[in-house]
Image 1 (cartoon, rainbow, N blue to C red):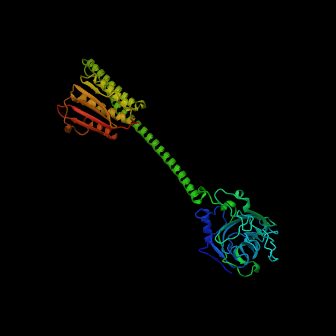
Image 2 (cartoon, rainbow, N blue to C red):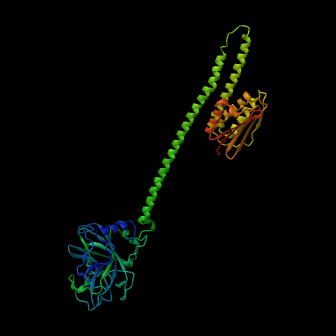
Image 3 (tube, helix red, strand yellow):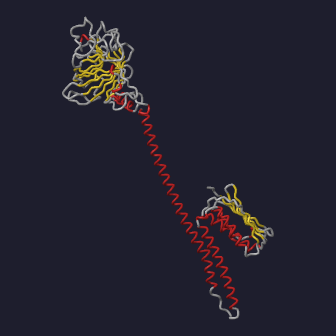
Length: 502
């Protein structure tokens, strides 16, 4: 008896590992719901009843079963047709139950071509030689139809050493009766193939008892039965043995159906969904941050408006209230004091109107552009200096871009320009003042320059003339303020603020 594995056979845990590789499409055409796979190669030579290679990997099937199983193997017949005429042998894969042989597929006693044996009925095969022994009655043996013409004619394929053949057969178990068996010889297992696309000349159908609890590989002398005898030749080499539940289990998958491709696609889909979820979460977070920033900006703007109303209008209203209660004094100067009080109230009311106009303009979203700021500053300077002896000259381009500005930016720039204009009127003793506006390289330059008496900036006390407030406002915008003045040479205040175009 001789049955050995050539190379490193896969059995037990190895078989399950190989099956897993098949399921993943790593290196084997076996895929899908494969129940068992033995890569081999396994040599069967002069081994009588053979040895079980299944080792309980698949549950036994008996005549009460109603399932369908597919069996597949590839064989290299080292013992071939050149040995068979004078040294008959039987070889193949045999389903056995409790030590008794049932269906076998490979090479039976009588045929000279690949065949099935231990089947039901007389069988269908080419006539045996005239000198064949009486026991070679052909019962239960079927030549396997194939697409290769044998030397004796007909659609037969004779075993030839080195010419590998693949056999796939289906067993449909019928409770209480023989199973329906369909054998495909050299099936087309390329991508996209099915049972229905196989050539009719490659298909053989018959009935057989296919109950099994073992799968054995045999090679023995046909005349000696199952007992030990001469297994003529070098035996048969079996490889790629497998049991599945569908024909599709053995069809080579398309590239996109391979396990690693499907796994990569699944991983890519998971990453895509995860990435989309992350992007959605990030987008929502950014939106919430924007909403929070907008809410904070609104709160800050409301606080600024309240502060301006309190600081500017509140102080003016307090001043008016005080002016409304003049010192009674003597009666002779009362009329003159009332006229002076009325003039002062009118002046304060005018300042209040100016301040309120600036506050309302700053919060109006219609004017959130550099163009509207330039127009407002030019109009303000012209109206502010008109009642004074100081002549106002404007240098503002007519093509100021409509770059966006926030209400806070407009408010800061307006208050700085107003403070600079008030300082000109109060302190400069100038005859002319220039308001210049220039836009370049994403920045706006606003310059208020007079020809007055000037002063030494080093002699100004900290916080004097509102200079520190002006610097704080322009710095909060990310800009800068330049002050250039000297006694007798006038004063120039230059504001540089960064802007972003639409």
